[in-house]
Amino acid sequence: MTFTGFEAKDFDTFNIEGLEERMEAIRSRIQPKFQAISEDIADDLSQLVGQEMHLHIAQHARRTVNPPKDTWSAYCHNKRGYKKHPHFQIGLFDDHVFVWLAYIYELPTKSEIATKFLDHLDDISSTIPKDYVISLDHMKKESSSVGELDLKAALDRFQKVKKAEFLVGKHFAKDSSIIKNGDAFIIEVKDIFSTLSPLYKLSMHD
Image (cartoon, rainbow, N blue to C red):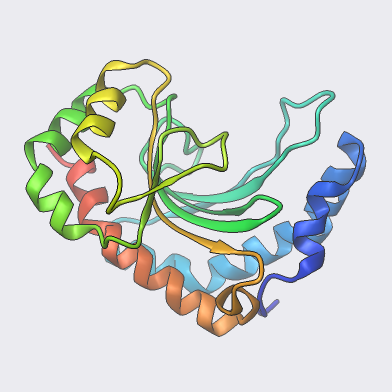
């Protein structure tokens, strides 16, 4: 399958009532697109970070009642799982697509990574473009632009608060022309991952 872009129907998935009904739409509409995207970017990402990166597609297996409000794919060096490791994400809510480098609360080395980032704060500040956004909770839609956020305060919180997270990347509104064009979106994702790869490599090495 060739990725040709996201369309209105993909976002409408999150308006479907019922766990099984929504999951069926996620599996049929969105997950094949995640698979197709990976075929275009996985090798490039592996070369970029210097190790093989494996695709993980969220299965939402723990849910028993409430349907998911978003869904995503993740790229991680670990073949078995991604939540306990730094990883890249591509996913969508009902109103936007997100492309992240993600450090979520399951990460056991959160404090050490935060310390490393704080030690390189100036380098990180100059690496991340001002039009990128940062989220401190992957469960919520809200994010702050890098230009508006106090990066040091965000990293301090990431270091000290058990449930705190740190995700950095870009959002694309569901009516963005970029996400509707498969080739344009792939180019954009590769650019985002390239921009964030120094941060990823910093967090992966002692």
